[in-house]
Length: 142
Image (tube, rainbow, N blue to C red; front, side):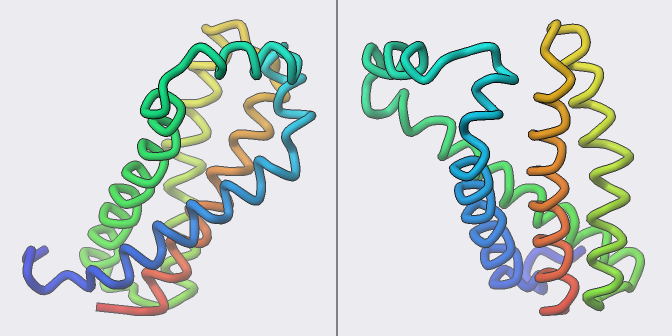
């Protein structure tokens, strides 16, 4: 994948769209997500109160950087498969999620002793992100 011939606009648009989706998704599911974490809203507020502005922003920054990397990697997969269609992007996104993201999350959450619902909620969020990324990157093409 030649660095200069990459459709960077598709990667940025896909990552931003996935990031916005994550914000909406977790806002809508904040109560079940907190319960799956085994925390209350008051506990989270206490944890946040002791953090600096940068410490509070870091997870959001890491999320957008992660989604940029995911979009770039999915773009690379589509280049090598020559599958720049919405369908190709969706399939690559779902397979990447199922083969790499869901499996990794499931193992990490199991060893961490987290509730299975956390894997369900977070897994669905990453599925949504990868489907969005795949559709946009695949649809916008090279």
